[in-house]
Image 1 (spheres, rainbow, N blue to C red):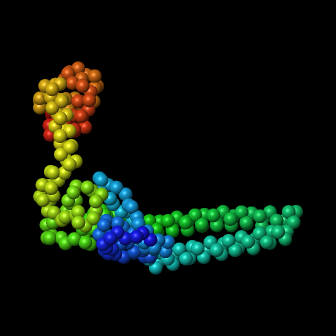
Image 2 (image 1 turned 60 degrees about the vertical axis):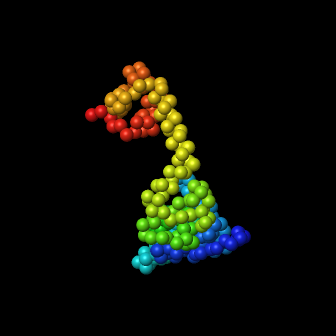
Image 3 (image 1 turned 30 degrees about the vertical axis):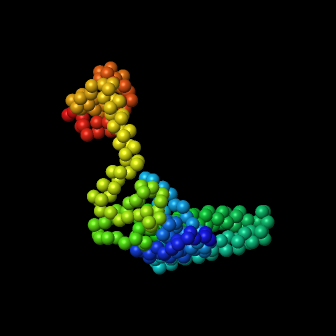
Length: 263
């Protein structure tokens, strides 16, 4: 079990669905997640990443329906009985001489029973697999949002987003999280170092492109039309007097994204 940080608090996550896993998941005010089950006594799980945020993805299982359980029990019982029958057939065959008239028939019966048992076991295995898939509950949650939900107060139903105050998406300490309305979050993100750097980069690249060519809205509309028609890159370079890189940026929507192709 991992040691706690000074002042770190833990709370169990409450799920809005029923499951049969013998599992308890806890979230801390520092943004850590730990699990408790048969093999884990509070191990920290790191989760994975999505768009720069930490996320946990877990699998839970609903209870098996009684009718399904009865069907699986019946099939398993059939397999056990057939296996026992094969063993008896093999013992009986061992008492015979290969020269006996009944030997060939006994051997054939064992082969048929073995084939039937193989198919039965495959059927049972598939039904167990299908049942497991049908009972699986896929759960995922952003860690910073869990911390906010369990350790900070949501001012109002309009405060639907959780932002990182210092813009560090990996700093999920409760002191670094704040509930915001969409408008507040938009204003907050405008001052993000990443947003500022990205805007400066795109502005610089647009100016660089503008220096090397006199593309107009009309030309870009025509270029996009020709791109959609599959015209060769060499033809576009020659016709518009631009580089392949500039054309690719326009094609990917990195430049002139607001301009539509000519009809």
